[in-house]
Length: 472
Image 1 (cartoon, rainbow, N blue to C red):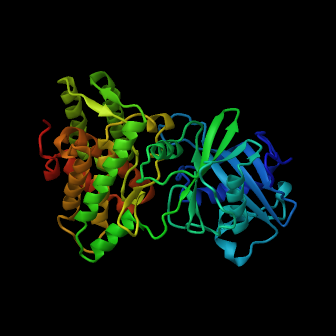
Image 2 (image 1 turned 60 degrees about the horizontal axis):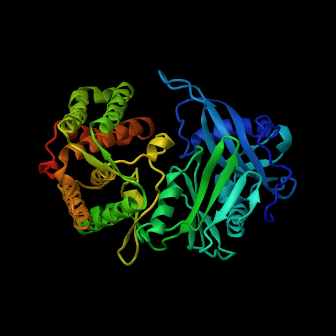
Image 3 (image 1 turned 30 degrees about the horizontal axis):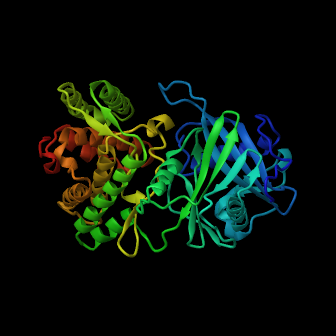
């Protein structure tokens, strides 16, 4: 593939023969993928948004980049939805070698790929090489724009490997030097997963790996951010896995929690410098509270186990509205949006980094880009300590509470303000997060439902000692 080449197979037509080969295979394969958001609803069809041939399919190995809109039966009571758009890298071979067996999508028996084997190309080193070389060379292929920060020189020949850990997107590591995060469910617009790390890099914030390159698609309906390449933190510990290991050994985690609180405050401080902040008064807070209330009502309809706690949970939101009506104001800024232990990495020298700034993918992009009180991120981390404690092989009384307190104390050391001094705001955001978790677990991991339900019981009658300090 050469610079600024538009292959003859590039098309954005909604009705092309390619779908005749892929549609019956994708109907079966897509719902089984961890990153597919529409589980539990039948796939009824596909609309091709764009298709780009990156390696000629007539050869031994063909490669397509696809953006497909997936149509499904609507959820009960839900309004009509145009369908989610997914990014796929489709490899085409005569037959798969054994090493690629986990990547199999199926064997096409109709359309232009009839008689060929179709698979998820990210498992294969050659297609992964094509992506890195395109980013390194800053090529344009059809509507795809492979772009690179001029300050990053990406050397060729880095050996790729697909990360197989469960995640809501897909990641390929290149030679333990870079990691390419390929977004699976995509929407047009400015994606915070690229926007915020670029803003933080401009502020020299060392807590977030600076983007080295990225992939966009320029289409008639707008610009899509499709992938981001960042330095790979070799030897770093995932915060979630680290917490579970320490729990299993019965070790204290408060020093790490405190350091993580400091790191979070550093990122928030840099974001507040880099991007505009706003003041939330009663008029601005009302839609925020209304959104929390609407999500609670929808959650109660979806998960009846929430019904006994609905009144108590709603009180978290009304208390915030009442405080705002008494002339309470808060500062809002850009935040991480989905902060938890799994979004944090500790390097071998003990420094913490924050990654994955996409926000909660289920929420609209415009909402994910809104300025928010930092309490949203803090609440997410407090909930994550709770999850870790419940995941321990043996009971760990007081572990989550100690970590919560240490995290807030560390945050205060950098920011100058302890999140616990605003208990009404923090309780509202933690309640909103726990309600979200209940719905998620009920749909995807029913065995975990007891974890957020335990938090729901606590939050419905607030008595958490880490939230008792009054707001000055």
